[in-house]
Length: 366
Ligand code: MRU
Image (cartoon, rainbow, N blue to C red; front, top):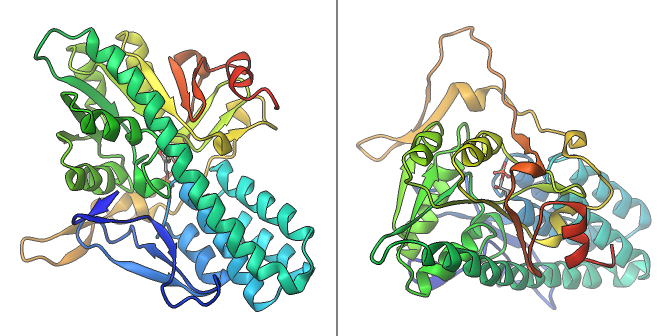
């Protein structure tokens, strides 16, 4: 996608890399929307911090960064012990997004077949491939999701805007490029469809208000930021034609784990007959898990709930506390939307029912 008109990905090899080996650069998403800042990851530990502290975030980008985290470890020490240690350090950074384990397993399997002296080159090459594959996958999700939006738009009266609600950030910032839930939206906008996006702010980290809104602004897509509790009201009044969200893990029964608050949107959508779609790349499917109820749900620091960051009128970015001294806060990062509330899963291979038969019809080798 473009930042200030310049084609940009969320992760790339630094320009001073030699023979495909070097530092990694990412967009520091903590600084958005107030500043566009990139940061260099020079070591395994820095890659782990970037994932854990959410300098980067979003399931596919977490996977891509973890792959480069292994590469950064291999350029220093390509031994079996170093590979095992890097795998463990990266795996514990965030528990919910399955793309993390998927990417780490991929790198470990690839590198086990390569002698240590060639592992750094192989790791960087595979990490770069994972990034390119993610871009292609997300573009395909965009194409299949565009068909869904076109069908829904076709039912509207002539001249009526199609209103799409999304939660959290499942745009290009959450992937290497394009995004998952936002890819169909970008493709619909580029195809000239009259669309408008309701953007859930997504407390406590405000990925909607900060990141999705910033992305949509960069691309010129009409949108409105709403607080997390508005969606149900809008749906009751016929002001949402479809919902589309991303996901951090889909289990084989079609349950969908995504940013906290997604479940409530799906309930409201069901009650109001609003189609509720989930966009996902295949590495987000956990073929080893049968039910979403078994997914580990990340619990983060309560300070993310009690303290908010924002820009003052004079341009300073400051933290403010919004709760009384001494009130504890709980911070559950994700929830599970049962498959029965999901209209369809939009993957790189097409749209399927949110159940095992649907998933296997698109991915029969599993
Ligand atoms: O905690 P985050 O910001 O990493 O959570 C991200 C989400 O929940 C996204 O919606 C999900 O990863 C899908 S990203 C394409």
